[in-house]
Amino acid sequence: MIKIAPSLLSADFSTIAAQIGALERAGADYLHLDVMDGRFVPNISWGPKIIGDLRRLTRLPFDVHLMIVEPERYLEQFREAGADIITVHLEACVHLQRAVTQIRSLGAKAGVSLNPSTPVALLEDVIGDLDLVLVMSVNPGFGGQSFLPVALRKLSEARELIDEGNPSCALEVDGGVGRENIRDVVAAGADVIVMGSSIFGASDPAAELRALRSLAETPGTH
Image 1 (cartoon, rainbow, N blue to C red):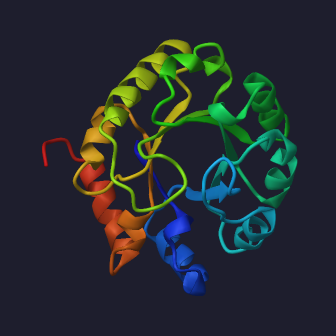
Image 2 (image 1 turned 180 degrees about the vertical axis):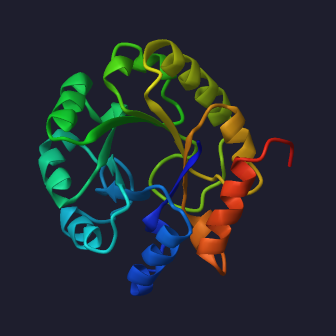
């Protein structure tokens, strides 16, 4: 079962309540929230306060992606704000297994994200402790970037690692996914697909979400 997680970083926040409601009715599985600090990535987004406010608008699970340095300092705040899944970057965690354990101790699901240049093999020693692996198919920090083809190989590698070491772990992809390649990422093993501009850039984001799901769940070529 493919899950779709619209990325709110691409939404129009002047009408955010209406957009979230429309996407929820259209069958969104998660809402993806990118947290950026201007240090780990060259952009700044929001913190726990905004996530806490958004939490009151929907019951959809919040898939919170921390693109920040020292994420372990803020895990409790994001959980209290309403994060259901908390994903940290392998590259940002000196003590990755400790961070994962902390997330799960707070009652959230724990994810680890990999930048495009980070090998999947670095997850071998923690795969059994994860609820989600996030393969970045763009360099993190900005929306609207083009999909990096190397991500297909990395998704396949991650799928193999998960199937061997922790079959209950989800495999998520984020960056540059749309109509032209959504079947490719599913074929490579992704079962959670984050999409921002592909959904919110459409004239009717809810209709686009439904169309993208239909493509993802229909075998065949483009």
